[in-house]
Amino acid sequence: MRKITFIGIVLLICLPVICKAQYLRNSYFVEGNSARLSMNPALQPVRGYYNLPVIGAFNLEVSSNSLSYRDIMDVVGEEDDFYKSNEFINKLDIDNKLDLNLNTDIISFGYHKGPKFYSFNIGARVNVDASIPRSMFEYLRDMDSDLITGSRRYNILNEEVNVNAYTEIGFGYSRVINDRLTIGTKIKGLLGCANMKLKVNELDIDAHLPDSDNLFLPYADIATSAELELSGKGVELQENAEGYIEDVEFDKFGIGGFGAAIDLGINYKLTDHIALSAAILDLGFISWNKGSSTVSKASGNIRVDGIDDLDVLDFDLFGLKKGEGKSRTTRLCPTLVLGGEYSILENKIGLGILSTTRFGEIENYSELTASATFRPGNFFNATVSYSLMQGSDTFGLALKLGGLFVGTDYMFLGDDTKHVNAYVGLSIPLAKKK
Image (cartoon, rainbow, N blue to C red; front, side, top):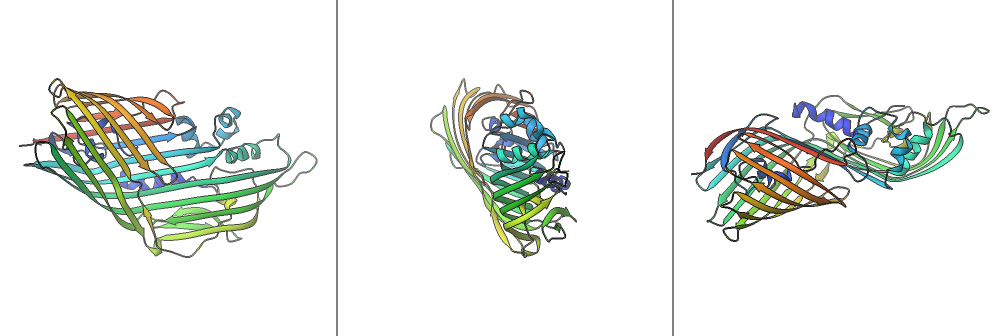
């Protein structure tokens, strides 16, 4: 039985281009770094910059509502026995959300010209949202157990995976209107690498397992309802003898779609000590051409032989048949950013509050972050923060030391951590604003 791990596939697609969270929230009030531009194009850095390739702006985030960092790595990696543990099963919710984001810039620079600031970047973006029901993990556990025999019935509902991988070419512009108001925008051209949308509405599985008195190859009768939308240059669907999709292969890497997006931002100094800001990010789309897209559907009954070697996302269970090529358009996941800061001691210390809401494919993610930023000089800035998000809380740190900027919004506290991210940026400073 041939298996596919969606997240692993997308990372494989993007590695040739790469060589997040989408954003590092702790960068927002650190005035001397360029990472804050990704959250609000109106937040001009103190100096121009040239970010070193790849390591100049690298951001990775992994999160879940129920699974720990170690569990997520097992699910998306090569491990195939993690679901055997009752300890693992007991920590699951009815619906288990997974979120993975990866951002990196291959080329990135910006410079001041009077009251204006210009920026340019070429980068890779990968976004993965998944929802896997507890019943799927229970099914995997039972199928791999020698203690389960005879006939068993499983009803698996609403399993979903959304993946988007693309290259971004961005042109940013901001302008100081007066002593209090700065506005900014970023126009982005998008080159689509791969997009997958899998929606499994229902799998009603009647599994038949052998015992010591009745030996036979395990099999299952499955009533299935599912749909797969797949786009990507060089992506091929492999079919078995019955005409059902059993695998995805990658013949070559290429561009399968084109799109555009825009970021809009504003920063306003209400008083000498209070600044308010807002931005909307990633308002955009990618249009995938007919030759690189396929829409496949399943609705009916199938029989699957050999059900003792399965994966969390296994095409053999879905009964999907390859459809005709069809052009399609997908949206990005926009983010709303609202910020406010109160500065004291001649702007040496800033007390900030930041709200971010990401409108995802499966669900929306909201977060509220309170931070204290220390700015004794442009060479050295540091931030500590505390965040509330989706029913949990965490703290983060960020440090700017010359051209080096590192930080995390969610501290890694061992393998049981459910939400972790990291940002690394290394840049060469250019001229200051005149």
